[in-house]
Amino acid sequence: MKTLSLTNLDRISELDFNRTSSTGGVGGSLSVIKIKNLEVLKAQYNNITKVLYSTTGDETNNKLSSVDLSYNNLSTSEIENTLSALDTLGLSNGTIQLGGTNSLPTRGNYNTEKLSLESKGWTVGIAGGIDTEFGTNDGYSEVTADSPPVASLLTTHPDWEGRPDLPAFPDQFLMDAANNRVTCKGNFVNCRHVNPIKAQVGSKILAFIEFDFGSTANNPDDERTFMLSLTDMGAYPQADEDVQNHNSLNFYTKFFGNNTIRLRQRVDRTNPSLDVTIGTSSLQALTGDRLRMQFTVDVKETAAATTVTISFDNITDSPDTSIIGLSQKVITGIDSNFYNSLISPTSNIKMSMQAGELDDTGIGTMNVYKVIARSIWP
Image (cartoon, rainbow, N blue to C red; front, side, top):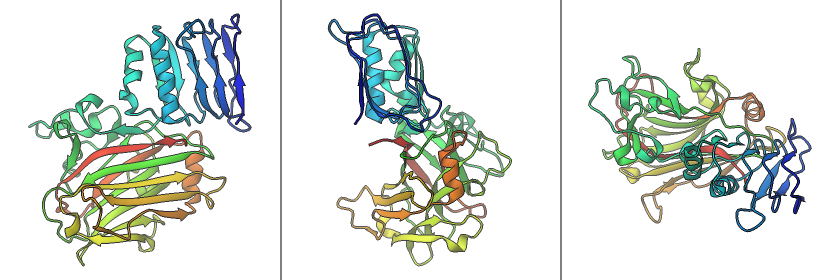
């Protein structure tokens, strides 16, 4: 690992390592310990994985009020270390940019240190994505008796966008913060997070969701589905709001008439008959249980070399005896158009969650409890 260490340089007030591209970035760690009078730190596009600060003793970076570390390789823990260090220094009205290809801090816009800095007048920019459990601490509200319940629609939350509650598409995702979930029961519902995920070769993208199909019996129904996607879509509304008509990576669960649920991958959006079944399980075995679908995209030099690790687990049963053939599986190679979107600096890669089908009115209640979609670094 390469390390750039600058110490005991008390006359320095600004360090500017900004680059315009991550190509050829040095990487490794950056230490600014004992640069007591440092006010400005700029290090965009350097593939940095760690930054060391001083918050105690004579070496304290107690003048540091402007930091730009966007488009590096900082993990969630390193992003949180930076936020915590700047919060501990106690300054007001600073600026920090940690976006781009870095990881998202835990709870995203509602991260504790981020909120603390903002309460002191700081401007804090973080990476795109979503990390939430739908509680009041993350700005979600209760279900109301409004008709339609516009005030409680998930799409009214600043981190989410999608269809309003309309006659053609009723019963969209509703916030239910009292139960730390969002819920739906209509015939076709979908929603996506607002702030796009940025990636580059070497990035890993995690998409994760915990949900259930309600407490009623899981009856066979060939139209009952739940789909988790990464898709390149701009802000709502788009001319075409069909997730699968954009560059995307899609995995979905589907009920089948032989009393099974299957985890499947949509490999060709123009030809659903080519969908691949990854695993199968009994419907009765999952009734009332909370499920977790997760996939990680390991972005390689090419679309053909990029891998996706997918898993689908019953997290209510312990040990999990109901999932048959749905354990972790590695898929090598992804659609080249989606790959190009993923690594493009101008793409709008967002996670979309979708339930039901246009011609189905019987999907029953579905609940979503936790969602994560973000860049991650080891």
